[in-house]
Image (tube, rainbow, N blue to C red; front, side, top):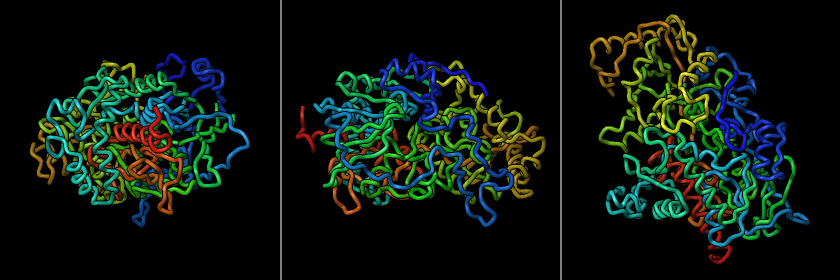
Length: 616
């Protein structure tokens, strides 16, 4: 498949950046942009997986396996579809005879959390190095659409907004959150997020991020981002924080993944080992602290199986295409860290089961098939029971519309077999405008404001749908009986469900426990018929390294590991244990990207205060 891509000034296409599989020609341009010491070896790139799945994993025919085994257990994820499949701790290295680089603080990761951690540490006077596996800054954070926060930011004060009541009170928010998390979280850590979330975003504004409130004041987005869609809004914010870090003297080393921590004989973490340019092993001496802010492990099958079994069972895909393979988490384990937030994750609805057809596990959120799967189609479980749809139209209650994105994920993840099935007919495109879904469910079209931010292949949602049809991920069949059989459903399950649905549509009034509005009742009568297997769309692992409210990593002995800090989502515990979708507001008190921003800010502040006496 040939895909045209928008090319950046560096020569790297957006798609190359997202997958970490840049071609050699683009790498040469990056070397020119970042310096000759960032030479790139194509055969040693970070990750060999791509959107089209050309690592050619081997899987059984989906009709034979369905979403679960014949004994009712879930069908195990196909490890070939994942970028990583290793849960073993990565042991630290001994102190070398000599160091290649020296700094006060080394930050691992240049996504939303890492950019903030590095900028904050440098602002406070620390000589800071920030290492990143990808070729450009921003990571997964730049793909986010909003930054959710339940109060405490200065702009929210202007609208007199706070939760659970105005004026903002961090203790009241903590009390509410702890109840929401069934008291399976560290209250000191939750209080830290509640009290410092707003100030962290205000600090970013001081650094140059131009925020604006959304139409619902629980979230903010960069001022100049597209106003009518959530796609790639946060790139403006991550770009601004990268620029601020540069002004403060942060030394960024791109295409240089961290491979191990360095720990001295006393147990103190004193450095990081990197593969500079993917080829040359270098030792960085971090005299005061190492901060791990390289994200979680959404794309590591073995870690999901071990630490978040509900995500391993119920999620059909991940939309975090920039790394998330869990090396930093494994490095922390190797240094003796404990784990927090067991079995907690965050997912959107509409994860398409590409891996069941031999495709890759991680997909861009705005892939046309993903967006199509998130519309209010007839949705059933493998028994033929209808499943509830959660409306994302803003209407009078925008907060509930935001919650719906995650609540529907739970509905789709928890049926028998941990998969759901969407069904529609040849007239599907005629219904989309009437569905009028908002937030990140809105379909991408070429006329979208600031469409140049979107990788070219995804600028028209039809492309992704055609990809899915060609891969038989979206099954197009001439009869419902054929579709039923090829989805792996028992005889009569689909045909009977469609018959009941069509009777409802003919009446024009839904008698389901959770009725669809009349304008969404479209009979399934016109061939060809379409069906797709879906589950959760994983976007955040909430299990991670145990930290205290100073962002210090805590060992299995209950003591702080000296010199080691971690921000979310390398750290865990932001929403307790056993959470399917990481509520509230899609992940924590601040949503996933906001949590990363806040965590980086807290890490940078605490590391300098605790290890350098506040510096300046």
